[in-house]
Image (cartoon, rainbow, N blue to C red; front, side):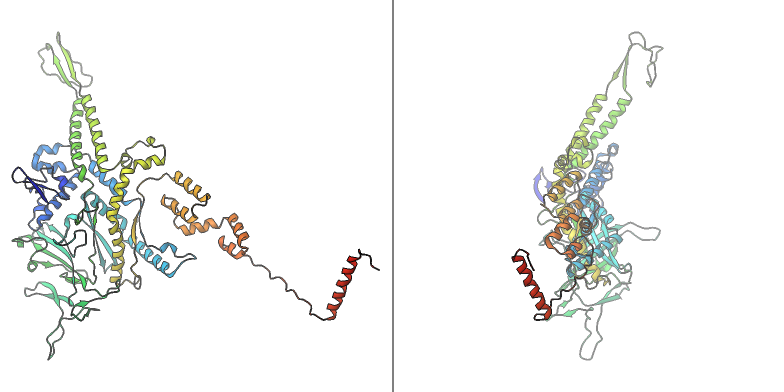
Length: 634
Protein backbone atom coordinates (compact mmCIF):
# COMPACT_ATOMS: atom_id res chain seq x y z
CA UNK A 1 0.00 0.00 0.00
CA UNK A 2 1.46 3.33 -1.11
CA UNK A 3 0.84 5.98 1.55
CA UNK A 4 3.07 8.88 0.59
CA UNK A 5 6.05 10.28 -1.29
CA UNK A 6 9.25 11.56 0.23
CA UNK A 7 11.96 13.43 -1.67
CA UNK A 8 10.93 12.74 -5.21
CA UNK A 9 10.33 9.12 -6.16
CA UNK A 10 11.07 7.59 -2.77
CA UNK A 11 7.90 5.88 -1.53
CA UNK A 12 6.73 4.75 1.88
CA UNK A 13 5.11 1.32 1.78
CA UNK A 14 3.10 0.21 4.77
CA UNK A 15 1.99 -3.40 4.68
CA UNK A 16 2.45 -6.63 6.62
CA UNK A 17 6.21 -6.54 5.88
CA UNK A 18 6.87 -2.83 6.41
CA UNK A 19 8.72 -3.44 9.76
CA UNK A 20 11.70 -4.39 7.56
CA UNK A 21 11.69 -1.13 5.57
CA UNK A 22 14.41 0.35 7.78
CA UNK A 23 16.95 -1.94 6.12
CA UNK A 24 18.24 -0.56 2.79
CA UNK A 25 18.88 -4.19 1.87
CA UNK A 26 15.15 -4.88 1.95
CA UNK A 27 13.58 -1.63 0.76
CA UNK A 28 15.26 0.60 -1.84
CA UNK A 29 14.06 4.01 -3.02
CA UNK A 30 11.13 2.37 -4.77
CA UNK A 31 10.34 0.16 -1.75
CA UNK A 32 11.58 -3.05 -3.42
CA UNK A 33 14.15 -5.57 -2.09
CA UNK A 34 17.72 -5.69 -3.35
CA UNK A 35 17.91 -7.84 -6.49
CA UNK A 36 21.31 -9.33 -5.73
CA UNK A 37 20.39 -10.29 -2.17
CA UNK A 38 16.92 -11.62 -3.04
CA UNK A 39 17.07 -13.00 -6.60
CA UNK A 40 14.31 -15.52 -5.83
CA UNK A 41 11.82 -12.74 -5.13
CA UNK A 42 12.52 -11.20 -8.53
CA UNK A 43 12.05 -14.36 -10.61
CA UNK A 44 10.06 -13.77 -13.77
CA UNK A 45 7.24 -16.07 -12.65
CA UNK A 46 6.78 -14.44 -9.19
CA UNK A 47 3.82 -12.03 -9.07
CA UNK A 48 4.83 -8.44 -8.18
CA UNK A 49 2.68 -8.41 -5.05
CA UNK A 50 4.59 -11.44 -3.69
CA UNK A 51 8.10 -10.01 -4.09
CA UNK A 52 8.22 -8.25 -0.71
CA UNK A 53 6.73 -11.28 1.02
CA UNK A 54 9.31 -13.72 -0.37
CA UNK A 55 12.18 -11.34 0.41
CA UNK A 56 10.88 -10.95 3.97
CA UNK A 57 10.86 -14.73 4.41
CA UNK A 58 14.50 -14.96 3.31
CA UNK A 59 15.51 -12.06 5.57
CA UNK A 60 13.77 -13.62 8.59
CA UNK A 61 15.37 -17.00 7.85
CA UNK A 62 18.77 -15.28 7.79
CA UNK A 63 18.13 -13.87 11.28
CA UNK A 64 17.08 -17.32 12.49
CA UNK A 65 20.20 -18.98 11.00
CA UNK A 66 22.75 -16.29 12.01
CA UNK A 67 23.30 -15.33 8.37
CA UNK A 68 22.32 -11.64 8.35
CA UNK A 69 25.95 -10.60 7.94
CA UNK A 70 26.13 -12.59 4.71
CA UNK A 71 23.10 -10.77 3.31
CA UNK A 72 24.29 -7.37 4.53
CA UNK A 73 27.51 -7.83 2.58
CA UNK A 74 25.59 -7.12 -0.62
CA UNK A 75 25.11 -3.53 0.61
CA UNK A 76 27.84 -2.90 3.19
CA UNK A 77 30.66 -4.86 1.59
CA UNK A 78 32.74 -7.74 2.97
CA UNK A 79 33.40 -5.90 6.24
CA UNK A 80 29.81 -6.74 7.24
CA UNK A 81 30.80 -10.39 7.54
CA UNK A 82 32.83 -9.58 10.66
CA UNK A 83 29.67 -8.82 12.66
CA UNK A 84 28.90 -11.27 15.45
CA UNK A 85 25.56 -13.13 15.64
CA UNK A 86 25.02 -15.22 18.74
CA UNK A 87 21.62 -16.81 18.07
CA UNK A 88 19.27 -14.50 20.01
CA UNK A 89 16.56 -14.51 17.28
CA UNK A 90 16.66 -18.31 17.11
CA UNK A 91 16.25 -18.53 20.90
CA UNK A 92 13.19 -16.28 20.71
CA UNK A 93 11.67 -18.42 17.94
CA UNK A 94 12.27 -21.68 19.82
CA UNK A 95 10.81 -20.26 23.04
CA UNK A 96 7.65 -18.89 21.43
CA UNK A 97 7.19 -22.10 19.42
CA UNK A 98 7.33 -24.29 22.52
CA UNK A 99 4.86 -22.08 24.37
CA UNK A 100 2.34 -21.81 21.53
CA UNK A 101 2.41 -25.61 21.08
CA UNK A 102 2.04 -26.34 24.78
CA UNK A 103 3.35 -29.31 26.67
CA UNK A 104 1.18 -31.74 24.68
CA UNK A 105 -1.15 -31.82 21.68
CA UNK A 106 -4.25 -34.03 21.68
CA UNK A 107 -7.07 -34.60 19.19
CA UNK A 108 -10.40 -34.59 21.06
CA UNK A 109 -14.01 -35.15 20.05
CA UNK A 110 -16.71 -33.62 22.30
CA UNK A 111 -18.83 -36.28 23.99
CA UNK A 112 -16.22 -39.04 23.78
CA UNK A 113 -15.51 -38.78 27.51
CA UNK A 114 -19.05 -39.99 28.28
CA UNK A 115 -18.59 -43.33 26.52
CA UNK A 116 -18.30 -46.50 28.58
CA UNK A 117 -20.07 -45.19 31.67
CA UNK A 118 -23.52 -45.74 33.09
CA UNK A 119 -24.79 -42.68 31.22
CA UNK A 120 -23.27 -43.71 27.89
CA UNK A 121 -25.31 -43.14 24.73
CA UNK A 122 -24.89 -44.34 21.12
CA UNK A 123 -23.73 -40.84 20.19
CA UNK A 124 -21.04 -40.97 22.88
CA UNK A 125 -19.87 -44.38 21.65
CA UNK A 126 -19.53 -43.03 18.08
CA UNK A 127 -17.65 -39.98 19.33
CA UNK A 128 -15.29 -42.20 21.28
CA UNK A 129 -14.72 -44.37 18.18
CA UNK A 130 -13.92 -41.35 15.99
CA UNK A 131 -11.58 -39.95 18.65
CA UNK A 132 -9.73 -43.26 18.90
CA UNK A 133 -9.28 -43.46 15.12
CA UNK A 134 -8.02 -39.86 14.97
CA UNK A 135 -5.47 -40.49 17.70
CA UNK A 136 -4.28 -43.70 16.04
CA UNK A 137 -3.81 -41.74 12.80
CA UNK A 138 -1.88 -39.03 14.66
CA UNK A 139 0.52 -41.65 16.05
CA UNK A 140 1.10 -43.25 12.65
CA UNK A 141 1.56 -39.92 10.89
CA UNK A 142 3.93 -38.46 13.56
CA UNK A 143 1.60 -35.52 14.02
CA UNK A 144 3.54 -33.83 16.89
CA UNK A 145 6.63 -33.62 14.68
CA UNK A 146 4.61 -32.14 11.79
CA UNK A 147 3.08 -29.62 14.15
CA UNK A 148 6.51 -28.58 15.41
CA UNK A 149 7.80 -28.17 11.85
CA UNK A 150 4.87 -25.98 10.87
CA UNK A 151 4.76 -23.93 14.06
CA UNK A 152 8.43 -23.04 13.86
CA UNK A 153 7.93 -21.76 10.32
CA UNK A 154 4.82 -19.90 11.43
CA UNK A 155 6.49 -18.18 14.38
CA UNK A 156 9.68 -17.27 12.49
CA UNK A 157 8.18 -16.27 9.12
CA UNK A 158 4.62 -15.31 10.04
CA UNK A 159 2.90 -18.08 8.06
CA UNK A 160 2.75 -21.87 7.98
CA UNK A 161 1.05 -24.30 5.60
CA UNK A 162 -0.29 -27.85 5.96
CA UNK A 163 -1.14 -30.05 2.98
CA UNK A 164 -3.24 -33.18 3.53
CA UNK A 165 -3.86 -35.84 0.91
CA UNK A 166 -5.07 -39.43 0.62
CA UNK A 167 -2.30 -41.97 0.02
CA UNK A 168 -3.83 -44.97 -1.73
CA UNK A 169 -0.69 -47.07 -1.22
CA UNK A 170 -0.49 -46.55 2.55
CA UNK A 171 -4.29 -46.38 2.92
CA UNK A 172 -4.21 -43.38 5.20
CA UNK A 173 -4.25 -39.60 5.15
CA UNK A 174 -0.82 -38.01 4.86
CA UNK A 175 0.14 -34.59 6.19
CA UNK A 176 2.96 -32.49 4.78
CA UNK A 177 4.48 -29.18 5.83
CA UNK A 178 5.27 -26.60 3.15
CA UNK A 179 7.53 -23.58 3.40
CA UNK A 180 5.29 -20.50 3.00
CA UNK A 181 7.68 -19.24 0.33
CA UNK A 182 6.31 -21.98 -1.95
CA UNK A 183 2.69 -21.05 -1.19
CA UNK A 184 0.84 -18.82 -3.69
CA UNK A 185 -2.89 -18.45 -3.02
CA UNK A 186 -4.86 -16.65 -5.71
CA UNK A 187 -6.90 -13.97 -3.94
CA UNK A 188 -9.00 -11.84 -6.29
CA UNK A 189 -9.54 -8.12 -5.95
CA UNK A 190 -13.12 -8.67 -4.79
CA UNK A 191 -12.29 -11.62 -2.52
CA UNK A 192 -11.86 -11.44 1.23
CA UNK A 193 -8.28 -12.38 1.99
CA UNK A 194 -9.33 -13.96 5.28
CA UNK A 195 -11.39 -16.59 3.42
CA UNK A 196 -9.85 -19.70 1.92
CA UNK A 197 -9.16 -19.14 -1.81
CA UNK A 198 -10.56 -21.35 -4.57
CA UNK A 199 -7.18 -21.76 -6.30
CA UNK A 200 -3.83 -22.41 -4.60
CA UNK A 201 -0.42 -22.98 -6.15
CA UNK A 202 2.73 -24.50 -4.66
CA UNK A 203 5.66 -23.48 -6.85
CA UNK A 204 9.45 -23.61 -6.67
CA UNK A 205 12.42 -23.74 -9.02
CA UNK A 206 14.43 -26.90 -9.66
CA UNK A 207 18.13 -26.28 -10.38
CA UNK A 208 19.86 -27.57 -13.47
CA UNK A 209 20.86 -31.24 -13.26
CA UNK A 210 23.78 -31.74 -15.61
CA UNK A 211 24.19 -35.42 -14.74
CA UNK A 212 20.66 -36.16 -15.93
CA UNK A 213 20.78 -33.50 -18.66
CA UNK A 214 17.88 -31.61 -17.17
CA UNK A 215 17.69 -27.82 -17.55
CA UNK A 216 16.53 -25.45 -14.83
CA UNK A 217 12.80 -25.94 -14.35
CA UNK A 218 9.80 -24.62 -12.46
CA UNK A 219 7.44 -27.03 -10.71
CA UNK A 220 3.90 -26.04 -9.81
CA UNK A 221 1.25 -28.03 -7.92
CA UNK A 222 -2.24 -26.56 -8.20
CA UNK A 223 -5.45 -27.24 -6.28
CA UNK A 224 -8.47 -25.67 -7.94
CA UNK A 225 -12.03 -25.78 -6.57
CA UNK A 226 -14.24 -25.59 -9.67
CA UNK A 227 -17.48 -26.85 -11.21
CA UNK A 228 -17.82 -30.60 -11.67
CA UNK A 229 -16.99 -31.62 -15.22
CA UNK A 230 -17.52 -34.91 -17.15
CA UNK A 231 -15.30 -37.90 -16.53
CA UNK A 232 -11.73 -37.87 -17.89
CA UNK A 233 -9.04 -40.52 -18.44
CA UNK A 234 -5.39 -40.67 -19.46
CA UNK A 235 -4.75 -39.60 -23.01
CA UNK A 236 -2.33 -37.78 -25.30
CA UNK A 237 -2.54 -34.56 -27.28
CA UNK A 238 -1.57 -34.03 -30.91
CA UNK A 239 2.11 -33.80 -30.02
CA UNK A 240 2.04 -37.08 -28.03
CA UNK A 241 2.24 -35.31 -24.68
CA UNK A 242 0.37 -37.18 -21.87
CA UNK A 243 -2.74 -35.25 -20.79
CA UNK A 244 -6.24 -35.90 -19.41
CA UNK A 245 -8.96 -36.41 -22.01
CA UNK A 246 -12.75 -36.26 -21.64
CA UNK A 247 -14.55 -39.61 -21.96
CA UNK A 248 -17.19 -39.67 -24.73
CA UNK A 249 -20.07 -42.07 -25.19
CA UNK A 250 -20.44 -44.34 -28.21
CA UNK A 251 -21.98 -42.51 -31.18
CA UNK A 252 -25.38 -43.56 -32.50
CA UNK A 253 -27.37 -42.90 -35.64
CA UNK A 254 -29.37 -40.09 -34.11
CA UNK A 255 -26.89 -38.68 -31.55
CA UNK A 256 -23.28 -37.55 -31.60
CA UNK A 257 -20.87 -38.72 -28.88
CA UNK A 258 -21.66 -37.11 -25.52
CA UNK A 259 -19.43 -36.57 -22.46
CA UNK A 260 -19.79 -39.32 -19.85
CA UNK A 261 -20.57 -38.40 -16.27
CA UNK A 262 -18.37 -39.63 -13.45
CA UNK A 263 -19.43 -42.35 -11.04
CA UNK A 264 -22.29 -41.14 -8.86
CA UNK A 265 -22.69 -37.82 -10.73
CA UNK A 266 -26.11 -36.63 -11.91
CA UNK A 267 -27.49 -33.80 -14.01
CA UNK A 268 -29.87 -31.31 -12.45
CA UNK A 269 -32.76 -29.76 -14.44
CA UNK A 270 -30.50 -26.87 -15.51
CA UNK A 271 -27.89 -29.23 -16.96
CA UNK A 272 -25.29 -28.77 -14.23
CA UNK A 273 -23.48 -31.80 -12.78
CA UNK A 274 -24.01 -32.52 -9.09
CA UNK A 275 -22.43 -34.99 -6.69
CA UNK A 276 -23.36 -36.17 -3.19
CA UNK A 277 -20.33 -36.49 -0.91
CA UNK A 278 -20.32 -38.82 2.15
CA UNK A 279 -19.92 -35.88 4.56
CA UNK A 280 -22.75 -33.77 3.11
CA UNK A 281 -26.50 -34.08 3.04
CA UNK A 282 -26.94 -31.81 0.03
CA UNK A 283 -25.64 -32.36 -3.52
CA UNK A 284 -22.62 -30.23 -4.42
CA UNK A 285 -21.73 -28.59 -7.72
CA UNK A 286 -18.01 -28.26 -6.92
CA UNK A 287 -14.98 -30.53 -6.82
CA UNK A 288 -11.21 -30.06 -6.50
CA UNK A 289 -8.87 -30.63 -9.44
CA UNK A 290 -5.18 -31.42 -8.95
CA UNK A 291 -2.48 -30.45 -11.45
CA UNK A 292 1.23 -31.23 -11.01
CA UNK A 293 3.39 -29.91 -13.84
CA UNK A 294 6.88 -28.62 -14.64
CA UNK A 295 8.12 -26.01 -17.11
CA UNK A 296 11.58 -25.32 -18.46
CA UNK A 297 12.55 -21.83 -17.39
CA UNK A 298 13.69 -21.12 -20.92
CA UNK A 299 10.10 -21.60 -22.14
CA UNK A 300 8.71 -18.92 -19.81
CA UNK A 301 8.80 -15.82 -21.94
CA UNK A 302 6.64 -12.76 -21.95
CA UNK A 303 4.45 -11.37 -19.16
CA UNK A 304 3.58 -14.57 -17.27
CA UNK A 305 3.43 -15.35 -13.57
CA UNK A 306 2.72 -18.40 -11.41
CA UNK A 307 -1.01 -18.24 -12.19
CA UNK A 308 -0.72 -17.69 -15.96
CA UNK A 309 1.93 -20.19 -17.01
CA UNK A 310 1.53 -21.54 -20.57
CA UNK A 311 -0.16 -24.91 -20.24
CA UNK A 312 0.93 -25.99 -23.75
CA UNK A 313 4.53 -26.01 -22.46
CA UNK A 314 3.76 -28.01 -19.30
CA UNK A 315 4.92 -31.56 -18.60
CA UNK A 316 2.49 -33.31 -16.29
CA UNK A 317 3.46 -35.74 -13.51
CA UNK A 318 1.86 -39.12 -12.80
CA UNK A 319 0.73 -40.44 -9.42
CA UNK A 320 1.27 -43.90 -7.96
CA UNK A 321 -1.87 -45.25 -9.64
CA UNK A 322 -0.71 -44.18 -13.10
CA UNK A 323 -3.12 -41.24 -13.39
CA UNK A 324 -1.84 -38.15 -15.19
CA UNK A 325 -2.06 -35.15 -12.87
CA UNK A 326 -3.64 -32.78 -15.37
CA UNK A 327 -6.76 -31.43 -13.64
CA UNK A 328 -7.36 -34.79 -11.98
CA UNK A 329 -10.72 -34.90 -10.19
CA UNK A 330 -10.05 -35.64 -6.48
CA UNK A 331 -13.75 -36.26 -5.67
CA UNK A 332 -13.80 -33.80 -2.76
CA UNK A 333 -15.38 -30.37 -2.45
CA UNK A 334 -12.67 -28.73 -0.35
CA UNK A 335 -9.02 -27.82 -0.91
CA UNK A 336 -6.99 -29.86 1.64
CA UNK A 337 -4.61 -26.98 2.34
CA UNK A 338 -4.57 -25.21 5.71
CA UNK A 339 -2.86 -21.84 6.02
CA UNK A 340 -1.80 -20.99 9.59
CA UNK A 341 -1.17 -17.27 10.27
CA UNK A 342 1.05 -16.47 13.23
CA UNK A 343 -1.12 -13.53 14.27
CA UNK A 344 -4.72 -12.57 13.63
CA UNK A 345 -4.63 -11.02 10.12
CA UNK A 346 -5.79 -7.49 9.51
CA UNK A 347 -9.36 -7.17 8.15
CA UNK A 348 -9.42 -8.53 4.62
CA UNK A 349 -5.78 -9.69 4.78
CA UNK A 350 -4.44 -13.21 4.36
CA UNK A 351 -0.96 -13.15 5.91
CA UNK A 352 0.28 -13.26 9.49
CA UNK A 353 3.17 -11.38 11.09
CA UNK A 354 6.46 -12.87 12.27
CA UNK A 355 7.16 -12.83 16.00
CA UNK A 356 10.55 -11.31 15.13
CA UNK A 357 9.19 -8.41 13.08
CA UNK A 358 8.96 -5.82 15.83
CA UNK A 359 12.33 -6.62 17.43
CA UNK A 360 14.61 -6.85 14.39
CA UNK A 361 16.14 -3.44 15.06
CA UNK A 362 16.95 -4.52 18.62
CA UNK A 363 18.64 -7.64 17.26
CA UNK A 364 20.70 -5.45 14.94
CA UNK A 365 21.78 -3.36 17.91
CA UNK A 366 22.60 -6.56 19.81
CA UNK A 367 24.74 -7.79 16.95
CA UNK A 368 26.63 -4.48 16.86
CA UNK A 369 27.16 -4.47 20.63
CA UNK A 370 28.30 -8.10 20.60
CA UNK A 371 30.80 -7.24 17.87
CA UNK A 372 32.12 -4.28 19.87
CA UNK A 373 32.34 -6.41 23.01
CA UNK A 374 34.33 -9.04 21.14
CA UNK A 375 36.80 -6.42 19.95
CA UNK A 376 37.03 -4.79 23.41
CA UNK A 377 37.74 -8.14 25.06
CA UNK A 378 40.76 -8.54 22.82
CA UNK A 379 42.29 -5.30 24.14
CA UNK A 380 41.41 -6.27 27.72
CA UNK A 381 43.18 -9.62 27.43
CA UNK A 382 46.19 -8.05 25.68
CA UNK A 383 46.54 -4.60 27.27
CA UNK A 384 47.87 -1.62 25.37
CA UNK A 385 51.23 -0.39 26.77
CA UNK A 386 52.81 3.01 26.27
CA UNK A 387 56.59 3.22 27.01
CA UNK A 388 58.27 6.57 27.52
CA UNK A 389 61.90 7.48 28.27
CA UNK A 390 65.27 6.54 26.91
CA UNK A 391 65.60 3.05 25.54
CA UNK A 392 68.47 0.77 26.55
CA UNK A 393 70.76 -0.59 23.86
CA UNK A 394 68.79 1.34 21.29
CA UNK A 395 65.82 -1.05 21.46
CA UNK A 396 62.71 0.54 20.02
CA UNK A 397 60.25 -2.41 19.98
CA UNK A 398 59.14 -4.46 22.98
CA UNK A 399 57.00 -7.58 23.18
CA UNK A 400 54.93 -7.92 26.34
CA UNK A 401 53.77 -11.23 27.69
CA UNK A 402 53.17 -13.12 30.94
CA UNK A 403 56.27 -12.96 33.17
CA UNK A 404 58.06 -10.58 30.79
CA UNK A 405 60.42 -8.03 32.42
CA UNK A 406 61.15 -4.86 30.48
CA UNK A 407 64.29 -2.91 31.34
CA UNK A 408 64.07 0.82 30.61
CA UNK A 409 66.60 3.59 30.68
CA UNK A 410 66.82 6.58 32.95
CA UNK A 411 63.44 8.30 33.32
CA UNK A 412 61.65 5.53 31.48
CA UNK A 413 58.10 4.51 32.38
CA UNK A 414 55.34 2.19 31.21
CA UNK A 415 51.70 3.22 31.06
CA UNK A 416 48.90 0.67 30.59
CA UNK A 417 45.66 1.67 28.88
CA UNK A 418 42.84 0.17 30.92
CA UNK A 419 39.88 -0.96 28.70
CA UNK A 420 38.06 -3.30 31.08
CA UNK A 421 35.67 -0.50 32.06
CA UNK A 422 34.60 -0.09 28.46
CA UNK A 423 34.02 -3.83 28.21
CA UNK A 424 31.84 -3.78 31.34
CA UNK A 425 29.75 -0.95 29.93
CA UNK A 426 29.30 -2.80 26.65
CA UNK A 427 28.13 -5.90 28.49
CA UNK A 428 25.67 -3.83 30.50
CA UNK A 429 24.40 -2.34 27.26
CA UNK A 430 23.96 -5.83 25.81
CA UNK A 431 21.88 -6.82 28.82
CA UNK A 432 19.75 -3.70 28.44
CA UNK A 433 19.13 -4.56 24.79
CA UNK A 434 18.11 -8.11 25.70
CA UNK A 435 15.65 -6.75 28.25
CA UNK A 436 14.28 -4.36 25.61
CA UNK A 437 13.85 -7.24 23.14
CA UNK A 438 12.05 -9.32 25.77
CA UNK A 439 9.72 -6.44 26.57
CA UNK A 440 8.92 -5.69 22.93
CA UNK A 441 8.35 -9.38 22.14
CA UNK A 442 6.29 -9.87 25.34
CA UNK A 443 8.60 -12.65 26.49
CA UNK A 444 9.43 -12.08 30.17
CA UNK A 445 12.66 -13.38 31.64
CA UNK A 446 10.78 -16.18 33.41
CA UNK A 447 9.58 -17.45 30.01
CA UNK A 448 13.10 -17.33 28.54
CA UNK A 449 14.50 -19.19 31.54
CA UNK A 450 16.84 -16.34 32.51
CA UNK A 451 15.02 -15.25 35.69
CA UNK A 452 16.34 -16.04 39.15
CA UNK A 453 13.98 -18.60 40.78
CA UNK A 454 14.62 -16.98 44.17
CA UNK A 455 12.68 -13.92 42.98
CA UNK A 456 9.41 -15.85 43.09
CA UNK A 457 8.24 -16.86 46.55
CA UNK A 458 4.93 -18.33 45.33
CA UNK A 459 3.25 -19.60 42.23
CA UNK A 460 1.04 -16.51 42.21
CA UNK A 461 4.06 -14.24 41.80
CA UNK A 462 5.26 -16.36 38.91
CA UNK A 463 1.81 -16.21 37.34
CA UNK A 464 1.90 -12.42 37.48
CA UNK A 465 5.32 -12.46 35.80
CA UNK A 466 3.79 -14.41 32.90
CA UNK A 467 1.18 -11.67 32.35
CA UNK A 468 2.64 -10.19 29.11
CA UNK A 469 3.08 -13.63 27.59
CA UNK A 470 -0.47 -14.62 28.52
CA UNK A 471 -1.85 -11.94 26.21
CA UNK A 472 0.66 -12.94 23.52
CA UNK A 473 -0.35 -16.61 23.65
CA UNK A 474 -4.03 -15.71 23.74
CA UNK A 475 -3.77 -13.86 20.43
CA UNK A 476 -1.54 -16.46 18.78
CA UNK A 477 -3.75 -19.38 19.76
CA UNK A 478 -6.81 -17.46 18.59
CA UNK A 479 -5.15 -17.09 15.18
CA UNK A 480 -4.69 -20.89 15.10
CA UNK A 481 -8.11 -21.87 16.41
CA UNK A 482 -9.69 -22.29 12.96
CA UNK A 483 -6.77 -24.40 11.71
CA UNK A 484 -6.94 -26.59 14.84
CA UNK A 485 -10.56 -27.38 13.96
CA UNK A 486 -10.03 -27.82 10.21
CA UNK A 487 -7.20 -30.35 10.61
CA UNK A 488 -9.27 -33.20 12.19
CA UNK A 489 -12.25 -32.26 9.99
CA UNK A 490 -10.22 -32.68 6.79
CA UNK A 491 -8.70 -35.93 8.09
CA UNK A 492 -12.14 -37.44 8.64
CA UNK A 493 -13.34 -36.37 5.20
CA UNK A 494 -10.28 -37.71 3.40
CA UNK A 495 -10.58 -41.08 5.14
CA UNK A 496 -14.18 -41.27 3.95
CA UNK A 497 -13.23 -40.17 0.44
CA UNK A 498 -10.64 -42.96 0.40
CA UNK A 499 -13.34 -45.42 1.57
CA UNK A 500 -11.23 -46.77 4.41
CA UNK A 501 -13.18 -49.64 6.00
CA UNK A 502 -12.73 -48.33 9.55
CA UNK A 503 -14.37 -45.04 8.62
CA UNK A 504 -17.25 -46.25 6.46
CA UNK A 505 -20.57 -45.27 8.04
CA UNK A 506 -19.06 -42.89 10.59
CA UNK A 507 -20.19 -39.25 10.56
CA UNK A 508 -17.80 -36.29 10.39
CA UNK A 509 -17.88 -35.01 13.96
CA UNK A 510 -16.60 -31.67 15.25
CA UNK A 511 -13.14 -32.29 16.65
CA UNK A 512 -10.25 -30.06 17.66
CA UNK A 513 -6.52 -30.16 18.21
CA UNK A 514 -6.11 -29.25 21.88
CA UNK A 515 -2.86 -27.60 22.97
CA UNK A 516 -1.54 -28.14 26.48
CA UNK A 517 -0.52 -25.61 29.10
CA UNK A 518 2.44 -23.37 28.34
CA UNK A 519 3.20 -22.08 31.85
CA UNK A 520 4.54 -23.96 34.87
CA UNK A 521 1.97 -24.61 37.58
CA UNK A 522 2.32 -24.46 41.36
CA UNK A 523 0.96 -27.98 41.90
CA UNK A 524 1.01 -27.71 45.69
CA UNK A 525 -1.11 -24.54 45.62
CA UNK A 526 -3.58 -26.04 43.17
CA UNK A 527 -3.84 -29.24 45.20
CA UNK A 528 -4.61 -27.25 48.35
CA UNK A 529 -7.20 -25.21 46.48
CA UNK A 530 -8.90 -28.30 45.06
CA UNK A 531 -8.85 -30.15 48.39
CA UNK A 532 -10.36 -27.17 50.24
CA UNK A 533 -13.14 -26.75 47.69
CA UNK A 534 -13.86 -30.49 47.65
CA UNK A 535 -14.03 -30.76 51.45
CA UNK A 536 -16.38 -27.78 51.54
CA UNK A 537 -18.54 -29.57 48.92
CA UNK A 538 -18.19 -26.61 46.54
CA UNK A 539 -17.05 -28.76 43.60
CA UNK A 540 -17.76 -32.29 42.48
CA UNK A 541 -15.24 -35.11 42.43
CA UNK A 542 -15.33 -35.03 38.62
CA UNK A 543 -14.34 -31.34 38.58
CA UNK A 544 -11.56 -31.95 41.10
CA UNK A 545 -10.11 -34.82 39.03
CA UNK A 546 -10.27 -32.75 35.84
CA UNK A 547 -8.42 -29.86 37.54
CA UNK A 548 -5.68 -32.20 38.70
CA UNK A 549 -5.37 -33.56 35.17
CA UNK A 550 -4.86 -30.04 33.85
CA UNK A 551 -1.82 -29.44 36.06
CA UNK A 552 -0.15 -32.69 35.01
CA UNK A 553 -1.17 -35.31 37.54
CA UNK A 554 -0.76 -38.81 36.03
CA UNK A 555 -4.49 -39.50 35.68
CA UNK A 556 -5.16 -41.04 32.27
CA UNK A 557 -8.90 -41.74 32.60
CA UNK A 558 -11.02 -39.58 34.90
CA UNK A 559 -13.92 -42.05 34.97
CA UNK A 560 -11.69 -44.96 35.97
CA UNK A 561 -9.99 -42.85 38.62
CA UNK A 562 -13.37 -41.92 40.14
CA UNK A 563 -14.37 -45.59 40.22
CA UNK A 564 -11.17 -46.50 42.08
CA UNK A 565 -11.77 -43.70 44.58
CA UNK A 566 -15.39 -44.77 45.17
CA UNK A 567 -14.31 -48.40 45.68
CA UNK A 568 -12.49 -47.33 48.86
CA UNK A 569 -14.98 -44.75 50.15
CA UNK A 570 -16.54 -46.97 52.86
CA UNK A 571 -17.83 -44.06 54.94
CA UNK A 572 -19.65 -42.60 51.95
CA UNK A 573 -21.05 -46.06 51.23
CA UNK A 574 -22.36 -46.36 54.80
CA UNK A 575 -24.08 -42.98 54.48
CA UNK A 576 -25.57 -44.08 51.18
CA UNK A 577 -26.89 -47.28 52.72
CA UNK A 578 -28.50 -45.35 55.60
CA UNK A 579 -30.10 -42.92 53.16
CA UNK A 580 -31.44 -45.46 50.65
CA UNK A 581 -31.62 -48.72 52.54
CA UNK A 582 -30.75 -50.49 49.30
CA UNK A 583 -27.75 -52.84 49.56
CA UNK A 584 -27.58 -53.31 45.78
CA UNK A 585 -27.03 -49.60 45.09
CA UNK A 586 -24.51 -49.41 47.92
CA UNK A 587 -22.58 -52.36 46.47
CA UNK A 588 -22.69 -50.77 43.00
CA UNK A 589 -21.21 -47.57 44.47
CA UNK A 590 -18.27 -49.59 45.82
CA UNK A 591 -17.91 -51.47 42.55
CA UNK A 592 -18.87 -54.78 44.14
CA UNK A 593 -21.76 -57.23 44.10
CA UNK A 594 -24.29 -57.23 46.92
CA UNK A 595 -24.21 -60.39 49.12
CA UNK A 596 -27.06 -62.82 48.61
CA UNK A 597 -29.69 -62.59 51.39
CA UNK A 598 -31.48 -65.88 52.45
CA UNK A 599 -35.19 -65.83 51.81
CA UNK A 600 -37.19 -65.57 55.15
CA UNK A 601 -39.59 -68.47 55.89
CA UNK A 602 -43.15 -67.92 54.83
CA UNK A 603 -45.68 -67.09 57.61
CA UNK A 604 -48.66 -69.50 57.61
CA UNK A 605 -51.76 -68.24 59.44
CA UNK A 606 -54.41 -70.72 60.68
CA UNK A 607 -57.74 -70.72 58.88
CA UNK A 608 -60.69 -69.01 60.63
CA UNK A 609 -63.42 -71.24 62.33
CA UNK A 610 -61.29 -74.32 62.91
CA UNK A 611 -61.15 -76.18 66.27
CA UNK A 612 -57.63 -75.18 66.77
CA UNK A 613 -58.60 -71.63 66.25
CA UNK A 614 -61.42 -71.86 68.83
CA UNK A 615 -59.10 -73.36 71.48
CA UNK A 616 -56.60 -70.59 70.85
CA UNK A 617 -59.32 -67.96 71.27
CA UNK A 618 -60.45 -69.53 74.58
CA UNK A 619 -56.96 -69.72 75.89
CA UNK A 620 -56.33 -66.07 74.91
CA UNK A 621 -59.51 -65.00 76.77
CA UNK A 622 -58.49 -67.00 79.89
CA UNK A 623 -55.08 -65.41 79.92
CA UNK A 624 -56.63 -61.98 79.65
CA UNK A 625 -58.98 -62.68 82.62
CA UNK A 626 -56.15 -63.95 84.78
CA UNK A 627 -54.18 -60.84 84.10
CA UNK A 628 -57.15 -58.65 85.10
CA UNK A 629 -57.64 -60.48 88.50
CA UNK A 630 -54.04 -60.05 89.51
CA UNK A 631 -52.87 -63.44 88.34
CA UNK A 632 -54.85 -65.59 91.00
CA UNK A 633 -56.37 -68.59 89.30
CA UNK A 634 -57.82 -71.86 90.64
